Image: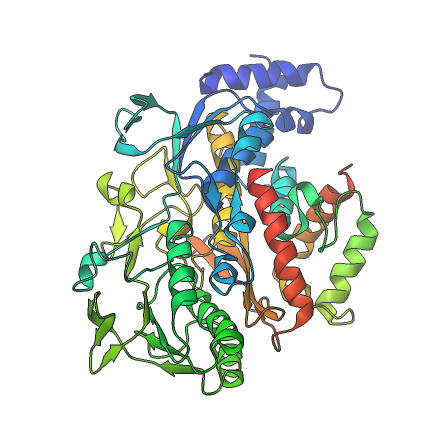
Length: 100
Length: 424
């Protein structure tokens, strides 16, 4: 095994044991899936609750910030948005923005 | 199935051709590496884990779902059927999309035994099935024997706490009840499936009676000392049904006389016209029969990263069967969330990777108080590495200020979206 390959595998293992969360390639997917119950699989809602798929990241982040601060009234999202960290909301909105 | 070393080798070679060093190689590792997962139970947890395993592994993991019923019948929304606002057809869905769209092998059968050492399941009609990982999502079974006179009399004294034929029985009894009759519902001591469910049922039965049989009465006999979920909101809802709903806390049921529909409580005896007894419950029988670790002899003790039963690698348990983490409800929504955590964990484990070390789950439960107005309870649960279990985020979650029509509409949209998330 050459050095480069060893380095790569080491990097991958670090990324997947949770030591370096940002490099876990599935973290955004996993977090976004917690929204799917209401907003549809991969953010594609059947209606009645808004779709998140393909929405611009900044728009989603601003909405979430407004829910958290109470600026934007909500029935439930003000309570849910406060349950996630900034880093998690960043990952979630990046994931939904990338959905077609 | 690839072993760990082969897999790492493949991942390394794949990355060697990639223009982005390291990270692109990692992304490739999340994909399926084959393997066979058997899911037992096609409810909110099991159907979700089956679909998400196929979707996220891009078809690389083979998934078999074993379910004893030929169709899915939803417990959430079933109180609306009992209240005459929805039909059984509205809450019944097929497993066809799991088969045709997602390639899940769906078997209508029952699991007789689980051999955790050999990693095999014995079924009634399909022989022995081997697995690399098994996910048990067996829901609850009732401790019917703990209520005298109840066993064998569930058609006379229905629970309707598993949606299906029991829902129809209870609805039919309610429809046949005379005006001026008493509908008594008994709630077991917590923890039980769907904490707000019995109180929602009381409201929706009262909503029906107010219109159809206004001289009647709903008697809520609660083994608990107080309302177990959305207390202030249900207290208000019960007040709006003044004269129709009577709430009695600390009324644990000892026995029933099914023929006369009489409930014998700790300090009282109640004769009803419709007697709806939700018996004490425990993890689905397969969990106990498989020798999995139980807490209080009732609920499965799991590792909260992989949801594997403690000390039983490869056997994951989700949904109502679990001994819950703090404030974690036994709800369909939560089972669906856990299903996704487990799907992600199994994909990683089969690829020789560590599972996600910080899984998040959240819950939203809507309850109707009449045909239009609903209210929610919500929570977000982040994994706590020190406590080694999910903990509710203190600043998050809560309940509605009051039942309202907007949330009534959201509740219906929630149902459509979560059913699609599991089954479409």
